[in-house]
Image (cartoon, rainbow, N blue to C red):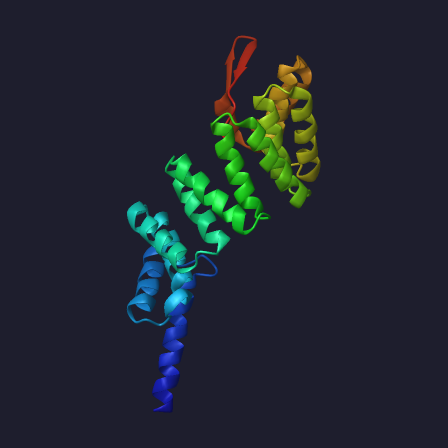
Length: 237
């Protein structure tokens, strides 16, 4: 009897580990099957099941099953309504489906629970930029920088917001700070190059754009040359 119980406990731990997928090596179908088994056998009860639904939602989304992913996101939020990260996860899902209103509702709720969640501030700022709410985007980007001043991408994101407002000097300042923190951040060079171009400093603009494309060749698609002239398109955040 003791051997059987020990084996059952070991099998249960194996299923739990497959569902949690700590190292990210399990394929989505494996994660889905494991999480479903945990739910069907009621290994966890009540609110403790929220992370099983959350993990299965990620697996469903990875394999393109959006409806089942949303169903599981909804269930996880229902079970743990005070968990800010669950609203963030569902908000990111909505944003990817271009449902900005739903994404904003979830991001607002997440920040209402935990105002220091930098990923939420960053994602909400992106939606604000897409809606030309630059004051909101600047506020969120600045708060994110205050909370994580050593994170290069946050400085670059705020520089992008300034760039969209044609505040080239502020954009150059923020992108320069981003580059100092991460010299290999290709988009920071690209954005600073665009800002230099907007300010009429062609040599610095060309230098930064060349560096950006060298670091990330995919950025070349946003540069169109015709003769000696070049036109630039800003990549999305």
